[in-house]
Structures are given as structure tokens and as C-alpha cells.
Image (cartoon, rainbow, N blue to C red; front, top):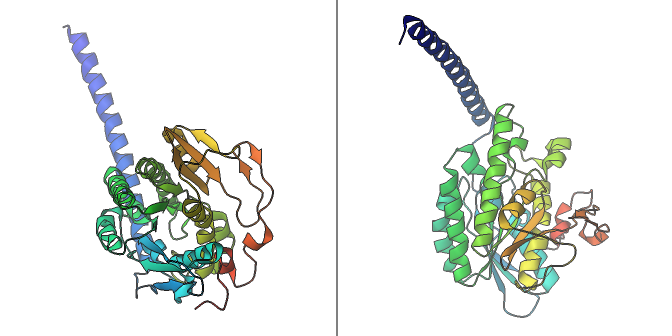
Length: 346
């Protein structure tokens, strides 16, 4: 090797070292900014001061027949943190809605824990199986994003939870990870990163849940525009968790899939208003189309979007008529009527 060649190699090494150092510096600055933003968000978002109301009990006791046992698992979004009356929690809203539509009593057990991550699901499933549930609703994933937990492990815990419940004869509906980037105290660029993490986790959750025999409803940024347009009304006082109005709207999105899983044969043939994809494609499409239900149909996955809040929806190439007026959420205070609540319920 000549002296010229050695000099060129040395110069290339110096340039490469400089570029690497610059990249490392930018990366360090970016990481520092993200960590600082995360710390700022934690200071703005207050810690839980008291557990949410439970809402456990029998709904629709005036109806005859054996009660449907419903369990609610997951994190604070499943528990209803941020509201003050049991009837405002997601579990109570869904139990009331199911009872009224099926005209059967529903016995509700809320086992969700504020602050829980997917790693806590095995313990919640243990408790749920003691009640011999007919149907389980799971809302999980937000804390896995905010705590940057291992995604593969989080998905594995969720899939195993669904598999155990299904093995016990329990039907399962999972609301996948919401868009954490829609939360006000989280600012760009952390907001953008949180949005990507949320979507990636939601897609992986969809695959795991459907493979395990459950159904998913993509939450994503479904409520984002409403929350941004009216944050005082849609968020609770901590600006992080939904208000009673926010939970009622979220429950109204889950309600059609919950009714479908209770009323329909899992082997039903897909209709013309549904899309059939392989599971990976279905999961990605659902992430980008909030409010989409994904379920298995043999070797394939079926996507279905239910009209909600009286909106006209495009069902994978088909236009649907607006939802009937009784299913729409009124603009006045009793938004919970979207899932069946009236002031006579206690």
C-alpha cells in the first residue's frame, strides 16, 4: 500500500468519524429533548388521587333470563378514571346498552386497574375467570406507549390473555391502543413519536387478538378531532383522561362490535359491506381507519365499520346511510344515551 493510499484511508476515517460524531450529537440532542418533553408532560398530568367508581352490579334486573356476565379489563381507560359516578364508567355504559338491546340482565365486574400495562393482564384474567364470564372487554396499550415498554412482550401478554379467556368460553372484544399523540400535554416532536408508537402497537395488537380468537375495534385518533375541538367538554380535569362525555363516545364506538360478538355466529359469512384481507393487511388498514372492527373468518380477516354518531360512513368501497337517530349522540348533557343510559339508571 502506497503512502497516498494510506493518506486517503486516514482522511476517509476522519470524515466518517466526524459524520458519526455529528449524528451521535443530533441523536443525543433529540433524545434529550424527548426526555425533557416526557418529564414536562408528567408534571402537567396529575397522578391519580382516588380510584374511579367501580360500577359493578346487575344492570337490567327487570328483564328475565340468566344474566350475561361481563368483565372489563385493562387500564385507566377501561376503569373510567376521571369520572365520579359509576353510571359514567365505560363498563356501566356498555352493560346498560347490552341489557337494553338484548332485553337481558347483565352482571358487570370491572377488573381494570388504573396505570396497568399489558404485563398486568395475566392477573386480571385470573380474577376474571373466577366469575365465569360470557364476554370480556379489554382496553389496553396507552401505558405501554407512555412507559416505552417492550412492544413484543406487551402484545404477547395481550394475546395470551385473549387465548385464556376464549379457552374458557368467553367472547372477547379489544379496543386497541389509542393515539397517545392526541393528548394535549404531549407536544411535538414527542407527540409525533407517540403517534407512531401507538399505531405500531395497535396493529400488532390486532394481529395477536384475532389470532387468539377475539375481535378488535381500532380506537386510534377516532376521538381526536372531537377532543381537540372541545377539550373542556371531552377531557376530565387532568387533561389526560376522558370526561363522562368522552367515555360515552368511546363506549358508543365499542358498542356495535360488542353487540355483534354477543348476537352473531362467529362463523357468519361476510356481507358485501365488509372487507376481506389477510390479517396483516387488515391490521394495517384498521390502524388508519379508526372505528374498524377486525375479526377472523377462516384463514382470512374481515373488516367492518359500523356507522356511529349518525355519520355517513364508507364501508370499504360502499356508502352507507346515516345511522338511525336513536343511536346518535345528542348534543345535550346525556351523551351516554348513545349506549343506552337514561336518568332512571342508577
